[in-house]
Length: 327
Image (tube, rainbow, N blue to C red; front, side, top):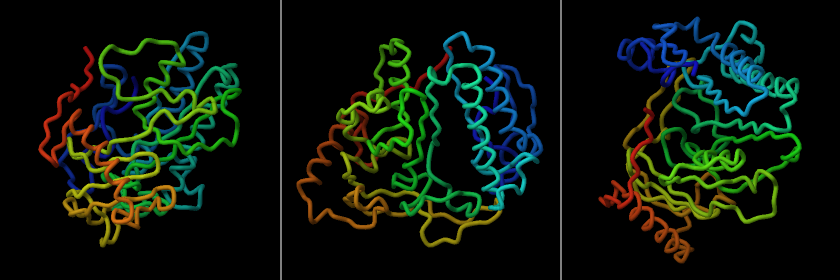
């Protein structure tokens, strides 16, 4: 392990609460190698993490390996190395994205040079949508509703690019419903590794990656947020949102240059049925027109509540999972 132990904004320089967080440490395995990360340190993280990844690949080229390269960027606060500063001509956010693009290219080039390109799956993705109240440091949803911290598409739908020479055909586009929880069983199947005996919520998507003509393995999805609130369920291209209090960016001016704008953390969102195939922006509530679809999705929600519970309806659930822990 080499990196920071939590989000890069949880430090004394946080714009919403200067001094509210302790110093941000940098770890190498279990040793703190820098007990107080500075803005100048963060400027070097993308390059430094990339270089360490390349060194790891070269060192382990003869052995199976797994690399999780979790760049702090483009999470606010944004920093970029001097060699990319101003290079994109699209502001700091553009510079940051340009450096991340360089990083991905360096990793793939290393796989080519080490002869591992056809034996390595590369996944480039994100954990959530943009933090919209940070304005020009947030990115864009591309017209999707709301953003980070919500169960709407602007908070949940993220890019996912995969590269595996000889296995994934260039230019392939797949709109099947998948989640990052599907990566574990997928990688285990590729590596022919056994899964743990406890419940695994993910589903292997290896057939989709290989381009096989199969039905998408994941038919439905449960949108849990705020500890254990079931805020929405999805089946195919249909999504049913339940009434719930939650974050909303609507009606507020976004911030600028690293300073956040206001956001409503307890907006009373109304329920709705949305056809994501025709309306990915979740603008047209179709509940009154498709009662049979609503009933089907309500049944999926009932199964979710019975399994994992739901704070919104007071259901404790029968099979709530314990968090994973390391010894």
